[in-house]
Length: 331
Image (cartoon, rainbow, N blue to C red):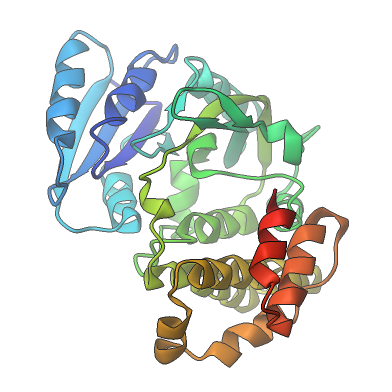
């Protein structure tokens, strides 16, 4: 059977969530879908048992399921392994604790085919574990009114007018192959933004489905909530994005967005997380603090980031009451 869309799902310590994730994929209205699960055998819970149970329940489904086993592989390596095995004309990356609307893949696929888009995205809502909506896509971001070229979309992305989240984007597989775009295996944080920056920079056509069809679950014990020095990957990934754009001839406006907005914000979020989790001294011992602070100083004011801009200034001043103020600004 020919395959239109390959869904790639890394699975590591998601026993309580992977069932719901997989059910949302099996219930898709789009036919000719393959599901590639990249299971990390270093999981310490019963993720694999839940995967097997769910697959067995849907054993009569038309969706073809393949399981790839890895060990101690970060999310970038897992996604790349899934991409290498994919046979679909389009690829959809998805995490093992989120879920999608039953029409998600069909609407993304139909839009991608209809407009010849290399990159097609939809809105997504941030939700609690119980499904209650914490934030809607339209609360912060915009949709595209018409298809645009990748550079235009990139500028909108870097200025926070649109947003592409991993679980809300359909990529044309040949487009990724032709441009040699994969996830950078060096990074476990910020890797998705780096990937999407490369995709948008190279895309000829980008368009969207003007509706939230994907759900980003906020869970208390999420891996992304566990702050370690590895979180330094985020600003380092943004630095790599800048280097990539510069090397490939990006225009001054794009580079300015990276230098004066995206890179400083990645530094701000990371250094604040280190401060709040008692890791800042350890950070200074291992990394050049001044290198990162110099990038933070480049943050320019924008009405969209008033809170972040004030937080950056307070951080750089080193005020003792900074964290009390930051928590209030954040809320």
